[in-house]
Image (cartoon, rainbow, N blue to C red; front, side, top):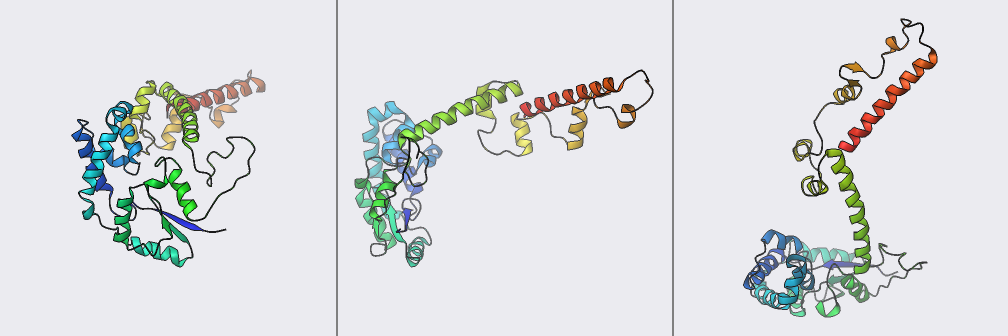
Length: 293
Protein backbone atom coordinates (compact mmCIF):
# COMPACT_ATOMS: atom_id res chain seq x y z
CA UNK A 1 0.00 0.00 0.00
CA UNK A 2 1.29 3.47 -0.88
CA UNK A 3 2.24 5.68 2.03
CA UNK A 4 1.98 9.44 2.14
CA UNK A 5 2.53 12.40 4.44
CA UNK A 6 -0.17 15.05 4.25
CA UNK A 7 1.05 18.41 5.51
CA UNK A 8 -1.00 21.48 6.34
CA UNK A 9 0.48 24.65 4.90
CA UNK A 10 -0.97 27.79 6.52
CA UNK A 11 0.48 28.14 10.01
CA UNK A 12 2.36 24.83 9.71
CA UNK A 13 4.90 25.31 6.96
CA UNK A 14 4.50 29.07 6.52
CA UNK A 15 4.04 31.55 9.35
CA UNK A 16 0.64 33.04 8.51
CA UNK A 17 -1.53 32.70 11.61
CA UNK A 18 -1.13 36.23 12.94
CA UNK A 19 -1.35 37.77 9.48
CA UNK A 20 -4.70 36.05 8.97
CA UNK A 21 -5.84 37.01 12.48
CA UNK A 22 -5.27 40.72 11.87
CA UNK A 23 -6.81 40.51 8.38
CA UNK A 24 -9.97 38.90 9.77
CA UNK A 25 -10.13 41.43 12.62
CA UNK A 26 -9.98 44.32 10.17
CA UNK A 27 -12.44 42.69 7.78
CA UNK A 28 -15.00 42.23 10.57
CA UNK A 29 -14.39 45.78 11.78
CA UNK A 30 -14.92 47.21 8.30
CA UNK A 31 -18.38 45.70 8.41
CA UNK A 32 -19.21 46.96 11.92
CA UNK A 33 -18.59 43.64 13.63
CA UNK A 34 -16.20 44.10 16.56
CA UNK A 35 -14.57 40.78 17.32
CA UNK A 36 -11.94 40.17 20.04
CA UNK A 37 -8.64 39.30 18.38
CA UNK A 38 -8.04 36.38 20.74
CA UNK A 39 -11.27 34.74 19.57
CA UNK A 40 -10.28 35.12 15.95
CA UNK A 41 -6.82 33.69 16.63
CA UNK A 42 -8.32 30.59 18.28
CA UNK A 43 -10.38 29.93 15.13
CA UNK A 44 -7.57 30.34 12.61
CA UNK A 45 -7.32 27.11 10.65
CA UNK A 46 -11.00 27.06 9.75
CA UNK A 47 -11.87 28.00 6.21
CA UNK A 48 -13.54 31.31 5.48
CA UNK A 49 -16.88 29.55 4.95
CA UNK A 50 -16.67 28.26 8.52
CA UNK A 51 -15.04 31.08 10.45
CA UNK A 52 -17.63 33.81 9.89
CA UNK A 53 -20.64 31.87 11.24
CA UNK A 54 -18.46 30.33 13.96
CA UNK A 55 -17.39 33.74 15.28
CA UNK A 56 -20.23 36.07 14.37
CA UNK A 57 -23.25 33.80 14.06
CA UNK A 58 -25.57 32.76 11.27
CA UNK A 59 -27.31 36.13 10.97
CA UNK A 60 -24.04 37.94 10.22
CA UNK A 61 -23.07 35.11 7.87
CA UNK A 62 -26.27 35.55 5.89
CA UNK A 63 -26.11 39.36 5.78
CA UNK A 64 -22.39 40.05 5.48
CA UNK A 65 -20.49 36.76 5.18
CA UNK A 66 -19.39 37.08 1.56
CA UNK A 67 -18.44 40.74 1.97
CA UNK A 68 -16.36 39.96 5.08
CA UNK A 69 -14.55 37.14 3.28
CA UNK A 70 -13.83 39.36 0.29
CA UNK A 71 -12.43 42.04 2.58
CA UNK A 72 -10.26 39.54 4.45
CA UNK A 73 -8.82 38.26 1.19
CA UNK A 74 -7.76 41.75 0.10
CA UNK A 75 -6.39 42.65 3.54
CA UNK A 76 -4.38 39.42 3.75
CA UNK A 77 -2.99 39.72 0.24
CA UNK A 78 -1.77 43.21 1.18
CA UNK A 79 0.61 41.65 3.72
CA UNK A 80 1.33 38.27 2.13
CA UNK A 81 4.81 39.44 1.08
CA UNK A 82 5.64 39.64 4.80
CA UNK A 83 4.95 35.92 5.28
CA UNK A 84 8.00 33.71 5.80
CA UNK A 85 8.46 29.92 5.95
CA UNK A 86 8.71 28.47 9.43
CA UNK A 87 12.15 27.25 10.42
CA UNK A 88 12.84 23.76 9.12
CA UNK A 89 9.73 23.59 6.93
CA UNK A 90 11.52 22.65 3.71
CA UNK A 91 13.86 20.32 5.57
CA UNK A 92 10.79 18.49 6.91
CA UNK A 93 9.54 17.89 3.38
CA UNK A 94 12.98 16.71 2.30
CA UNK A 95 13.18 14.30 5.25
CA UNK A 96 9.77 12.82 4.48
CA UNK A 97 10.73 12.38 0.83
CA UNK A 98 13.91 10.64 1.98
CA UNK A 99 11.71 8.10 3.73
CA UNK A 100 10.00 7.23 0.45
CA UNK A 101 6.77 8.98 1.39
CA UNK A 102 4.62 10.87 -1.05
CA UNK A 103 4.26 14.41 0.29
CA UNK A 104 1.03 16.28 -0.33
CA UNK A 105 0.64 19.90 0.77
CA UNK A 106 -2.99 20.17 1.85
CA UNK A 107 -4.59 23.59 1.86
CA UNK A 108 -7.95 25.10 1.11
CA UNK A 109 -6.39 28.50 0.46
CA UNK A 110 -6.94 30.28 -2.84
CA UNK A 111 -4.69 29.12 -5.72
CA UNK A 112 -2.70 32.38 -5.81
CA UNK A 113 -1.86 32.02 -2.12
CA UNK A 114 -0.67 28.44 -2.59
CA UNK A 115 1.45 29.50 -5.56
CA UNK A 116 3.14 32.06 -3.32
CA UNK A 117 3.76 29.50 -0.57
CA UNK A 118 5.25 27.01 -3.02
CA UNK A 119 7.74 29.67 -4.09
CA UNK A 120 8.56 30.54 -0.48
CA UNK A 121 9.22 26.88 0.32
CA UNK A 122 10.92 26.17 -3.00
CA UNK A 123 8.77 23.05 -2.99
CA UNK A 124 7.36 22.82 -6.52
CA UNK A 125 9.74 20.06 -7.50
CA UNK A 126 9.85 18.54 -4.03
CA UNK A 127 6.20 17.94 -3.14
CA UNK A 128 4.23 15.28 -4.99
CA UNK A 129 1.14 17.44 -5.13
CA UNK A 130 -0.92 20.10 -3.39
CA UNK A 131 -4.52 21.12 -2.98
CA UNK A 132 -6.28 24.49 -3.11
CA UNK A 133 -9.78 25.82 -2.52
CA UNK A 134 -10.65 24.57 -6.00
CA UNK A 135 -10.31 20.98 -4.78
CA UNK A 136 -12.83 21.19 -1.92
CA UNK A 137 -16.48 22.08 -1.52
CA UNK A 138 -16.30 22.66 2.24
CA UNK A 139 -13.24 23.57 4.29
CA UNK A 140 -11.97 22.26 7.62
CA UNK A 141 -13.25 20.77 9.83
CA UNK A 142 -15.19 19.08 7.01
CA UNK A 143 -13.28 16.07 5.56
CA UNK A 144 -13.10 17.35 1.96
CA UNK A 145 -9.51 18.53 2.25
CA UNK A 146 -8.19 15.22 3.59
CA UNK A 147 -10.08 13.30 0.93
CA UNK A 148 -8.67 15.53 -1.83
CA UNK A 149 -5.14 15.13 -0.47
CA UNK A 150 -5.46 11.34 -0.30
CA UNK A 151 -6.68 11.33 -3.88
CA UNK A 152 -3.66 13.40 -4.93
CA UNK A 153 -1.45 10.81 -3.24
CA UNK A 154 -3.20 7.96 -5.05
CA UNK A 155 -4.49 6.50 -1.80
CA UNK A 156 -8.02 5.27 -1.38
CA UNK A 157 -9.24 3.68 1.85
CA UNK A 158 -11.79 0.89 1.59
CA UNK A 159 -13.76 -0.38 4.58
CA UNK A 160 -16.18 -3.27 4.95
CA UNK A 161 -19.01 -2.60 7.35
CA UNK A 162 -22.43 -3.74 8.50
CA UNK A 163 -24.62 -0.79 9.38
CA UNK A 164 -24.82 2.68 7.88
CA UNK A 165 -22.99 4.44 10.70
CA UNK A 166 -20.62 1.66 11.73
CA UNK A 167 -17.48 3.45 10.54
CA UNK A 168 -18.16 6.82 12.18
CA UNK A 169 -14.94 7.75 13.96
CA UNK A 170 -12.84 5.19 12.09
CA UNK A 171 -9.35 6.66 11.55
CA UNK A 172 -9.35 5.86 7.82
CA UNK A 173 -12.80 7.32 7.19
CA UNK A 174 -13.10 11.11 7.17
CA UNK A 175 -15.58 12.36 9.75
CA UNK A 176 -18.60 13.89 8.05
CA UNK A 177 -20.50 16.86 9.38
CA UNK A 178 -23.47 14.59 10.15
CA UNK A 179 -21.28 12.16 12.10
CA UNK A 180 -19.57 14.94 14.00
CA UNK A 181 -22.95 16.42 14.93
CA UNK A 182 -24.23 13.04 16.16
CA UNK A 183 -21.09 12.52 18.29
CA UNK A 184 -21.35 16.04 19.66
CA UNK A 185 -24.98 15.47 20.62
CA UNK A 186 -24.02 12.33 22.57
CA UNK A 187 -21.21 14.22 24.28
CA UNK A 188 -23.58 17.08 25.14
CA UNK A 189 -26.09 14.67 26.72
CA UNK A 190 -23.40 13.03 28.86
CA UNK A 191 -21.96 16.43 29.79
CA UNK A 192 -25.40 17.71 30.80
CA UNK A 193 -25.85 14.76 33.14
CA UNK A 194 -22.38 15.31 34.54
CA UNK A 195 -23.12 19.00 35.18
CA UNK A 196 -26.32 18.06 37.01
CA UNK A 197 -24.57 15.52 39.23
CA UNK A 198 -21.74 17.87 40.11
CA UNK A 199 -24.19 20.72 40.77
CA UNK A 200 -26.22 18.52 43.12
CA UNK A 201 -23.11 17.45 44.97
CA UNK A 202 -21.75 20.98 45.27
CA UNK A 203 -25.06 22.66 46.10
CA UNK A 204 -25.04 24.93 43.07
CA UNK A 205 -26.56 25.14 39.59
CA UNK A 206 -25.47 23.40 36.37
CA UNK A 207 -24.88 26.83 34.83
CA UNK A 208 -22.41 27.70 37.59
CA UNK A 209 -20.62 24.38 37.13
CA UNK A 210 -20.44 24.92 33.36
CA UNK A 211 -18.97 28.42 33.61
CA UNK A 212 -16.86 28.24 36.75
CA UNK A 213 -15.59 24.73 37.35
CA UNK A 214 -12.64 24.64 34.98
CA UNK A 215 -14.61 23.88 31.77
CA UNK A 216 -12.62 20.71 31.22
CA UNK A 217 -9.24 22.23 32.03
CA UNK A 218 -7.01 20.54 34.60
CA UNK A 219 -6.71 22.79 37.67
CA UNK A 220 -4.20 22.71 40.49
CA UNK A 221 -5.38 22.16 44.06
CA UNK A 222 -5.54 25.85 45.05
CA UNK A 223 -7.22 26.91 41.81
CA UNK A 224 -9.75 24.08 42.10
CA UNK A 225 -10.51 25.07 45.70
CA UNK A 226 -11.01 28.69 44.68
CA UNK A 227 -13.33 27.55 41.86
CA UNK A 228 -15.44 25.58 44.35
CA UNK A 229 -14.69 22.11 43.05
CA UNK A 230 -14.20 20.84 46.62
CA UNK A 231 -14.43 22.06 50.22
CA UNK A 232 -10.93 21.80 51.58
CA UNK A 233 -7.39 20.58 51.06
CA UNK A 234 -6.37 17.99 53.64
CA UNK A 235 -4.02 15.08 54.17
CA UNK A 236 -5.33 11.55 53.74
CA UNK A 237 -5.25 10.74 57.47
CA UNK A 238 -7.11 13.94 58.32
CA UNK A 239 -9.78 13.19 55.72
CA UNK A 240 -10.14 9.58 56.87
CA UNK A 241 -10.49 10.71 60.48
CA UNK A 242 -13.18 13.22 59.48
CA UNK A 243 -15.08 10.54 57.58
CA UNK A 244 -14.90 8.01 60.40
CA UNK A 245 -16.00 10.31 63.22
CA UNK A 246 -19.20 12.18 63.89
CA UNK A 247 -19.35 14.77 66.66
CA UNK A 248 -16.35 13.20 68.31
CA UNK A 249 -17.86 9.69 68.33
CA UNK A 250 -15.92 6.97 66.57
CA UNK A 251 -18.00 5.31 63.87
CA UNK A 252 -15.72 2.27 63.75
CA UNK A 253 -15.06 0.74 67.16
CA UNK A 254 -11.43 0.34 68.09
CA UNK A 255 -10.18 -3.26 68.28
CA UNK A 256 -10.12 -3.06 72.08
CA UNK A 257 -13.67 -1.72 72.35
CA UNK A 258 -14.90 -4.13 69.74
CA UNK A 259 -13.92 -7.17 71.76
CA UNK A 260 -14.27 -5.76 75.27
CA UNK A 261 -16.16 -8.03 77.69
CA UNK A 262 -17.60 -4.94 79.44
CA UNK A 263 -21.04 -5.70 78.14
CA UNK A 264 -21.37 -9.44 78.58
CA UNK A 265 -25.03 -9.31 77.60
CA UNK A 266 -24.05 -8.20 74.09
CA UNK A 267 -24.26 -11.17 71.77
CA UNK A 268 -21.97 -11.89 68.86
CA UNK A 269 -24.82 -11.18 66.44
CA UNK A 270 -25.46 -7.77 67.99
CA UNK A 271 -21.78 -6.88 67.73
CA UNK A 272 -21.75 -7.90 64.06
CA UNK A 273 -24.84 -5.81 63.33
CA UNK A 274 -23.30 -2.78 65.03
CA UNK A 275 -20.14 -3.15 62.96
CA UNK A 276 -22.13 -3.46 59.73
CA UNK A 277 -24.10 -0.33 60.55
CA UNK A 278 -20.87 1.56 61.18
CA UNK A 279 -19.42 0.39 57.87
CA UNK A 280 -22.58 1.41 56.00
CA UNK A 281 -22.41 4.87 57.56
CA UNK A 282 -18.79 5.21 56.42
CA UNK A 283 -19.72 4.18 52.89
CA UNK A 284 -22.53 6.75 52.85
CA UNK A 285 -20.05 9.45 53.83
CA UNK A 286 -17.57 8.29 51.20
CA UNK A 287 -20.25 8.44 48.51
CA UNK A 288 -21.22 11.94 49.66
CA UNK A 289 -17.56 12.99 49.47
CA UNK A 290 -17.25 11.53 45.96
CA UNK A 291 -20.31 13.43 44.78
CA UNK A 292 -19.00 16.63 46.35
CA UNK A 293 -15.78 16.42 44.39
